[in-house]
Image (cartoon, rainbow, N blue to C red; front, top):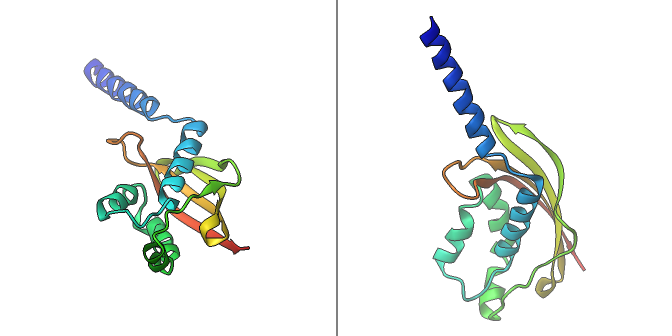
Length: 151
């Protein structure tokens, strides 16, 4: 009987230690979100497929699709005009919600950017999950919505 008790206790302690090891602050998440969006929006005619794939791994397919749709019509212009985009944050990343989403630690992050080359402002809303325990950082953008305003 004691052996079962100790086994349960050891299991509970190991789960507690693992959950502490993967506990990230709001600042960690906000910083990662901004860096990821900046890197993604900094598209260039010099990019290779491997550069794009390095960004792609930060997104699920559901979150990557809106980015693909956004850039689809702009890629010809980027390549033909030899453009490199220079996005600028208009706001700091704000965590508007956090909690447990489908068993993962998650955050809803909102941030706005300006992309002067296209004369647009983009308001992003991201759902970020702590879902890649074997990676550092372990975050992935689960879903993404964009509101684009031309000026």
